[in-house]
Image (cartoon, rainbow, N blue to C red; front, side, top):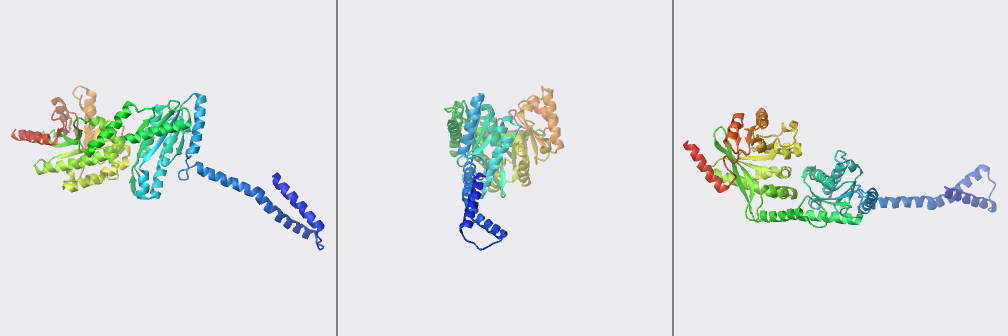
Length: 504
């Protein structure tokens, strides 16, 4: 303001001197005033522009450029320099309050491939989806109150970061899991279903580092270790923990087993309680040999690393091939194939089954697709759509582990299933525990009301089988009849049993 006044005063004095020494014709007061105003404007305007407007404009441009440098233009999230400055501030506050700060780095794998194969417009849509998903998790006050204070940033490339004050390692693990679940959820971009497999690395102040630079470095190290081992998440601890080392070793061995065809399908028969005949079999994967592990150990790791997709493709093709081979030899039964949640929401899920049957010229009705209640309820609308499409093509749908999840019956009534499978945890004690007996009776009644058949797992005694039959259960499977058998042994067992039944 002072500058403006000074410019006007100096200009007016200059005009007065101009009028004093320059002879001018007689003019009216109005003419002098107009001339004075014109001259004042001619002098003041340039001076005002260069001394006031131009500096302010330059400052505004500089501030906008700094803002663009400090924030990602696509997502609006802080870039690395600003994020590190924020992190340093939070660490200073944590040191004063004797509290902790969690840093979670997130790598949504595959975005580079999407950019390359589908174009940068689609890739940018995916990046925005990831950013919005992470921010939504951090705005969810139902998780942790302190997440309202969290800061989300986009660091180098497609690496995102979450700074969570007051979050210890246990809290960070839950936050990481929720972020992965949100980011990994299939979503549609221009009619194409995109699946992201997210990896996270965690470092905690003051447990893992005492300054911002070291905390970022150690979180990045944990992220790299998780990606190298094909794991969902790792927390930094300076050295690979025995558990992490074990998981990384399993992933490496499992990849080798897939490549070298060391996996094998076993088949556990299903018995029709009304006819006592073999009505079908469930295909169960086994990893045999000295390098092999139980499915309970390697399947969860396969699901976390994405290897389950490759395994499921092999299982479906092998089960369909074996079903057709048995059909040619006179064994006409239905084979059930288990699919994981990740496979259920894969874009190629439907073609995986229809393509296998098309190649083998097998009727789809000979294959049952088993999905767990929990996987179907993860994203019920999409699950219902996928399963309905398979069922319309002739495949049977089975809802496995019914009653062990936390599903809403409002969704369950829309799932296009043909049968419900009763989990063995309910079945085993129905002859000795009246509560289990009432529960099984209720589920069977519910299934029948929904026009579904029932299959009970884990049947090991004749008494349990007889009670299930009395309660109206149609089919059973378990050690009472047979353990899972390899294809050759199953065929031999089947012929011997059916032959015995035929002579009875």
